[in-house]
Image 1 (cartoon, helix red, strand yellow):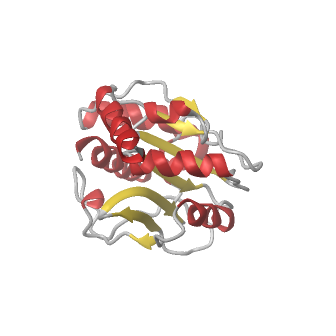
Image 2 (cartoon, helix red, strand yellow; image 1 turned 90 degrees about the vertical axis):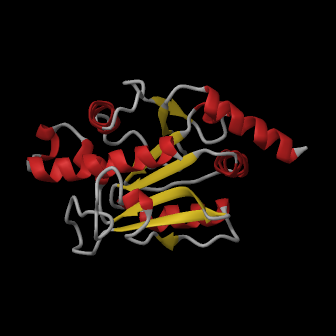
Image 3 (cartoon, helix red, strand yellow; image 1 turned 135 degrees about the horizontal axis):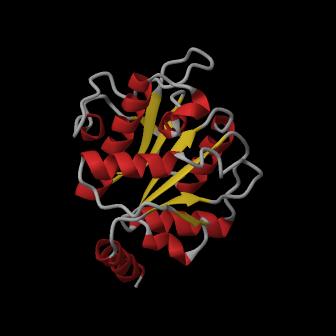
Length: 212
């Protein structure tokens, strides 16, 4: 019965237009950070790689059935994250049935989110995604993997993932700050080439979701 339900959820994803949402999680972290990031990424992606994503991203809670309306959900922030048991079950079913979660550490989330990811997939390790993975290859090539957008502690940027039967269901971008690079130019005063790099990497993530 469970497999049939998950199959129906998978069919539901394919029947929806391209829509994305921000995950409104509990724990006190600022899930609402970077408010201009996704609209800018959507605009860039629609113009440059011909996606047809609705301009205004939705907002969805981890335990909501509405989660299954979005093939792609983005999560960011600086602080604490707590997934309740119902959050864990719903998020896990979401990803097992075809949904994709992108978690972007806005610096300060790492010590909390790794514990919550482990609760979602206790038997699956969070592993570094190699630079030759398709998510770094098209439509834009990142030969060294995840680009560095903002310097905070001088560590190298890393993209970690959870793979279920070889399918990438979750990406966690760390020491990178992609979302800041997607924001309006006057917010962080990033050079144009840095913002372009961030937007291209974001477009690669969306391309991976909507073309696989």
